[in-house]
Length: 130
Length: 243
Image 1 (cartoon, each protein chain N blue to C red):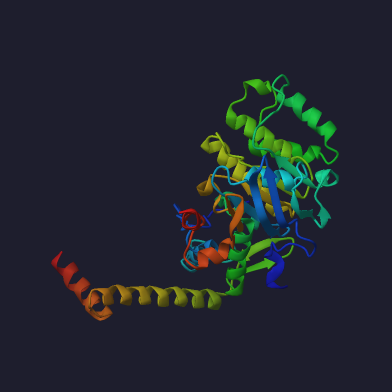
Image 2: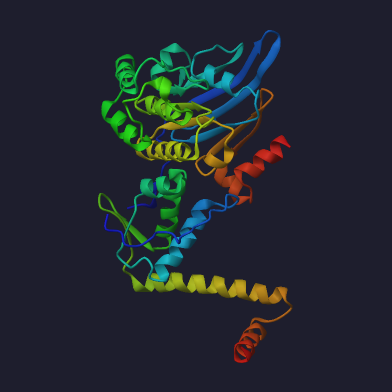
């Protein structure tokens, strides 16, 4: 296969205490919206993904089901699984990741008793000082 | 096109293994008590438990090599017994391949005794497990012999594979090759695996179901994804149950 990209970031540490297909789907979603996996790319088969990572094939299958549900990948029977070329779908997935990042950022600020804006303000001052 | 074409769900049909109320006593000692569970077709089920829990006895009963005192076992809907030997491929706990044969001679012999031997599959799995055919079996390392045994198991077309401690004394690289060969089999041909092991960390990403037994009784039956959705790993669940 002329695969010039890594499906998952390397190294990829699996957390065995959380659903693995969610971890895979989330990571691959990130790779697609950031362009590391370009639109139209052909993804490895379920079998290749499972054997390559030493996970149950059901985990690999669910990963792809999840990504297909989001519209990020499309399967053509007999040809394989491909990343969508639909920029709007990829844009929507990017927004979802951004929302999650913001949420985590706000939570981190909250732990310090700050607002997100205060944390950003600090960063501005800090980089001026540095 | 539906989302289900990735699905590894088993085709409809009887459970690969169905145990009901199994009990076994040997020399007045109770080995198994009231063991009941189902293993759906296409599953990779881990049979986990401490030494002496009764895992090997249970596997021998499922394989039809021993009879329980109470209860029943069905394999693909048929009562377990020697008539069902063709339906399953068992890798026993203790190895006993004939040391005086070369690997090639053994494989030729196995091809002759197993009616469901698939020579094409044998070559594929041999490459995947990196088994060389020249050496005498007596000269193999523990890991090499384990890989040869698994090769013997997987070269048959039997739909149920039972592995009893496939990793005992096996080096890391062999473990990875064995795990990867198992994944390949599972993804390709709707086979069902039942694997008894101590090596939870090696295998925990592979299992989709767990059966935990201790002192001859079922301690827990879990769907692994459900376990993870509640924030537990196979290992942490095992520790909880046997703490």
